[in-house]
Image (tube, rainbow, N blue to C red; front, top):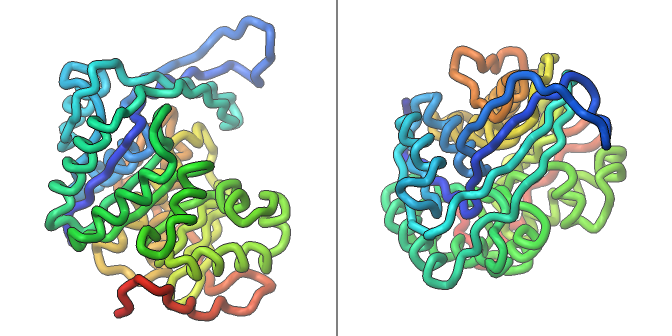
Length: 336
């Protein structure tokens, strides 16, 4: 496997319990469940598992006690791990999956991180980032965590020389982007709903008008974000870099569960980047890996044999729009 190490931080990890419904969810009625599964989860954990399945050098950092079931499950998967004890059990998230792939998620809030735990996690990430190629900050923040903590971590990690990818939403995403160019990640992975949130529009408007979508992406670049990997579920994805913008169509698959598919997409992009692939191929690998994950049950991650990049169609630009011009480098960012 080419490339260096990837470090992931999952501030709010979980045990992901997937329950298979026999049909469409009916409120107030009894459902006879099919097969169910419990897997170690949280967005950063999912990214790390997908990277490890492809043979990448990855290290996952999680707040969890050494005897927590999450840690036991990750050790069983032989995933390299750094734990920061919290004295509390890791939360459980529930996913109700219908036969057509529709997924309803019920997420517990997680264990609060006080100032001491946050400092210990930040120190663990900084130590692991030394010599790493990428650091991935991924997922929600547990109760009581300042919304600008990811922005703080980006600034701290940048001093190690590692590039930073962030995948989060709502308050933490808004706080990250409001913190200025010094806190802007090298790679941001929003979905359409999250991009609409920070662009001040609706997901429907974003998807209906490519010009609105491109304007939202331009705004992220203007704020200092290096690359934007916009995942669009079954519609594919868009990758925007300083060199241009590309769009990809997802292959036709039988969707079994969408849990963790976006995390696998991010892992696919990182794998291609570590191998030195150009932007179009990074996007192709991202969509292929995310699609392969969506075809699996629960929050399972695909093996290399299940990922088919040649089934993904990648095109420059977006249909109906001119190419995206190169973003103007923001102050405070290194320019190659």
